[in-house]
Amino acid sequence: MIFTTDLSVPEGPVLLPDGSFLCVEMGERGCVTHISPDGETKRTIAKTGRPNGLAVDKDGFIWVAESMKPTPCLIRMTIDGESEVFLTECDGEPFLFPNDLAFGPDGALYMTDSGITFEDFVPGGQIRPDWDTCPIDGRVYRIDVQTKAIKKLDTGIRFTNGIAFDPENNLYSNETITGNVFRYMWNDGEVGPREYFGNVIAPDTQEGLKGPDGMKFDTDGNLYVTVAFQSNVTVLGPDGKVVERIKTDGNFPTNLCFGPPGSKKIYVTEDQNGTMEVFDVDADGLPLYTGEVKV
Image (tube, rainbow, N blue to C red; front, side, top):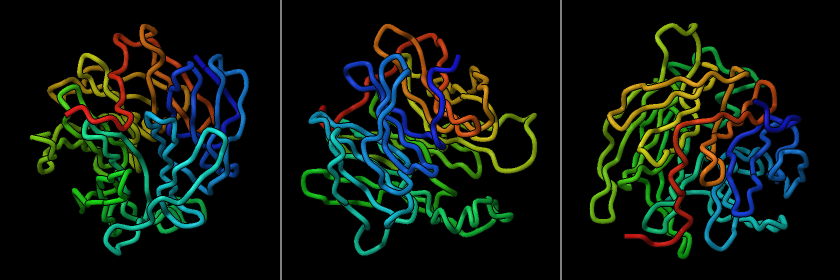
């Protein structure tokens, strides 16, 4: 079912406490958008350039992974649209493509950087023909939002994209080029080394670029992964095996969030049709961390 329409390349949906939603519009509008609980009305909070991922903290600040203009950066914004560029680099190394965001149990903000600029990967609006072999150095960062201290946790990923924490506080990222999902085990407040968890590419899909984008966990420990150019949300069980593929109306699902507790619904942003689709699922979403310290 279609929840709302007329979105310009949407991504990064977030459910707010009052039942309304945020998302970004990465297309011509280049903005963060507020959507009413019924999906009927929308308003622009602020234009940033080409915003990608979103996260909201306990104080109501909206954190935006800005992937292109005026420079790739992390932005902190209020619901009224007041914003500041928070970070643009890590130890002198500039961000290339800030992509997705998730707060962790330690109160820190975790961010993926796809490892290649948007202009280099999609020159002239077309995905480059050597997308599977071109140089890409995807990263995962940990950011202290109180001090701005930033640490690079991983590097060398082939287009890092979605990021999420599971019920045991383990961190997950994914790799769009290969379809792989990775896990970093949580141990005494630190994340461990990257390990393979699963893969979301369907064996019967067409040739060409397709792979994981945004992802979220449900309360049962299942990981829901939007798979761009594969027309589905692939659900991986706690063992990393595919348990379900939820077909989307459009070919380019980009991210998802769960609906209010008790609704057992997912809301999926989809770029081909510029919509947010809604699906019934078997469990509620795992509550997201919002910057509070839980460990």
